Length: 314
Image 1 (tube, rainbow, N blue to C red):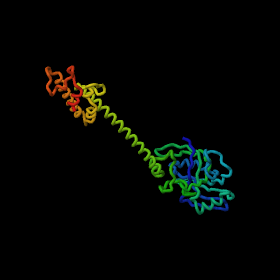
Image 2: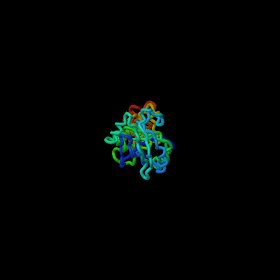
Image 3: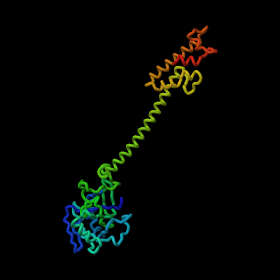
Image 4: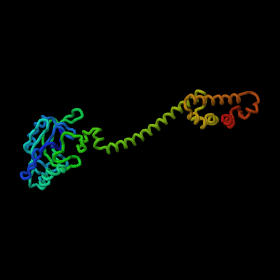
């Protein structure tokens, strides 16, 4: 795919010579084979790109907004010349700057005494492809500019912008689109901690909701089992019971059934209640004068005395 790239350059280990009078910083490393942004540049891509960098304009800072937008004349500070590809190392050249530019003296002083105050970066169009976990630059198709940027928080200076990763604490973080989980842990541990806390809270909320749904499902199944066992033993459904039927399957009895640890225990309670109901029914249906013990169980029509039945089952 084709995309616009911005890279910081690295000249570590390169002999840099600053000629203030001529306005030249000689021997800067323009581009290496490996980028701290996680990109790999093919050697043949750099060799073919050398001529594209020859005479490339150097500006102060990246353009605002679109990387390919026109630059302000006041941003122009110099150009890159004498570009050459060194096998196994990358592209090198000389930075010719305008000694009359407003920032020329500052640039020369920083290059000699405080290179960490400023860094190089290039702005190019390139053809890339994904190979495994790395983005490979197969060809640089256009060099828009090489820019001077001040970013001491992520670079180590004019000659140490980007190159072979060292694993040190000053290494530039990769682009967000190319970042891995390990990259986030390394460069944005605070962001990872925030995400963990947020996801942890979401997980806890989801877990509580799931526990609630499981409890509801357990209660539904228990009630279905209770209804089935009541029907099996000829006892009324609590949802439909009224009158003396309501006394047989009272609210307290239903609660005791739903609190039973398993179906066996529930079935035992229902069987006991069914036997008690059957015993009361037998007494009510017995011919002749009721005994003193049974007389309160018999209604005017030979049915149940609800109050007496409740006393007998409780």
